[in-house]
Length: 367
Ligand code: SAH
Image (cartoon, rainbow, N blue to C red):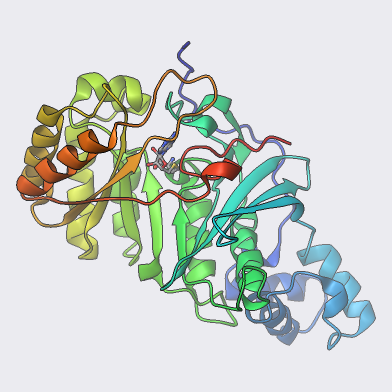
C-alpha cells in the first residue's frame, strides 16, 4: 500500500453560494434586508427551513410570489440532491448518496435504534487524513462542505424520520460527525453547523448539543479550540493504538501530534466540557489487537483522562483492496476484558450498514 500525503488545506473550488443555513439568525435578517425585503421574511424562511424542514421555495406559499423568487435566488440555492438511497438491517439503516451543486458526491447514514435515531454526517467530500484502513481516507480530499451542506443532511434526515421513511414516524435525536471527512480540518464550518443543528427551532433544528458527537483523528490544537467554544457536544478521538510507533502508520497525522499530545488535548476538552471523551479503537487482526496493547491503552488512558473516558471498540470493516481484517471474536473479547480490568470503561460498537457499504470507514461515494 502506498502512503498518501496528509492534506490540511482543501481546494477552494466548488463551495455553493450562500444559503440561509450558513447564517446565524442575525445574519439572516441582514441578508434579507440586503435583498430589499422586510426583516420578518427572515423568520418566515427560518420557520420553513428549520421548523417545517422544507428547502423548496415552491412550498413557502405564505410568502408572495415576487418576494419568494427574490429570496429563493438570493438565499436558497439548491444544495444537495438524492442520487440514491440504500437500506439494510431490516430497513432500520439507510445510506443516502448526495450530489452537490458542482457534482461532488457525499454520503450520510441514518440509523434507527429502539431508543434513538442517529444520523452519521459528512463534513468534507473525501478526506485528507490518509488513514490506510479507511475507504474515505484512501480516496483523498475533494473539498470542504459548506455549513449549509452539513446542516442540509440533517434537515433532510429529520424530515425523513418525521415522514415515516424509516418505518414508523420518529424523531431524529442524535448526530455523529463520523461520515466522510475530518470535521476539525473544516473547523469553522463544522462549529457553525453545530449551532444551526442545535439552536432551538425555528432558529435552528433544535437537537440537543449533548446528542451531537464530533469525531477527530486528533488535531490537538483544534481540539483545544473546540473546548474553548464551550459547547456541550461529545468529543470522540480515533486513537486506534496507544503507541506512537504503530499510530504513525494507522493515523498518519500522529507524526504531527503524538498520542500524548492528543490525550492531553482530550483531557482539556473533558475538563472544560465536563463530558467523558470517547476513544475509538478499530480492532485489526494481528495489527493492534494484542493483549499488551489493551493493557497499555488502559494505562495511558487512566494516566491522562482518569474516569473521563470510554473506549468504543469497532470491529474493522475491511475496505476494498485492504490486506487487513477484523480481529477474531475471542481476541476482541479478551481485548475488551483487559481494558475494563485496567480500570477503563470499554464496549464494542455495533456496526450497522455492512451490506450497503455504509458501516464505519466504508463511505466512498461511488457514483
Ligand atoms: N475523520 C474523523 C471522522 C470520520 S471516521 C475520525 O477519524 O474520527 C469515523 C470513525 O470510523 C473513526 O474512528 C475512524 O477511524 C473509523 N473507521 C474508519 N475506517 C474504518 C474501518 N474500515 N473500520 C472500522 N472503523 C473505521
